[in-house]
Image 1 (cartoon, helix red, strand yellow):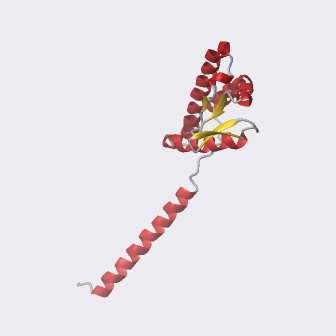
Image 2: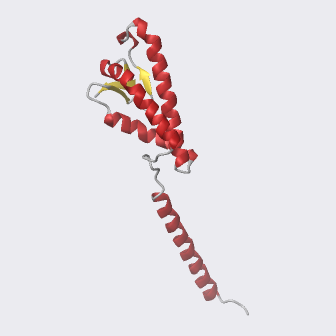
Image 3: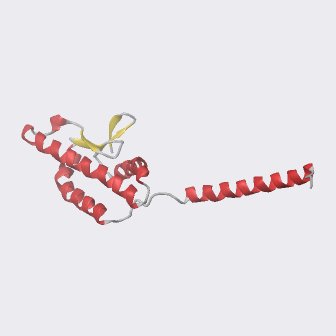
Length: 149
């Protein structure tokens, strides 16, 4: 039996409605697929413990302005002149260890969320969190330069 153009039009409208419904469901799924930044695994807990143990050594150098928080969620030596010459090598090693743990932490959180591809987004989220939690007097990178909180 031959379809009339009206029957074809009705089938087309049904197809469009189905596609719109699928898009709505997909959009809702994406909206609720935000990473859980507080997720815990043994690997994440080990990294956090390592970072907490190191923080006591880094804190005086945040306070003096020798090191600061970077805009990409890591830390950096901001003013090497603020460090005694005898301490520079040790501080560089502490900064490197901290950055290694931070990078691993971001990736572990992404993996624990089931989305390893979210690593850079999680790192961006933490960059803002670190700066928000920084103590008054600490330095952080903003707009390409260092700013004191």
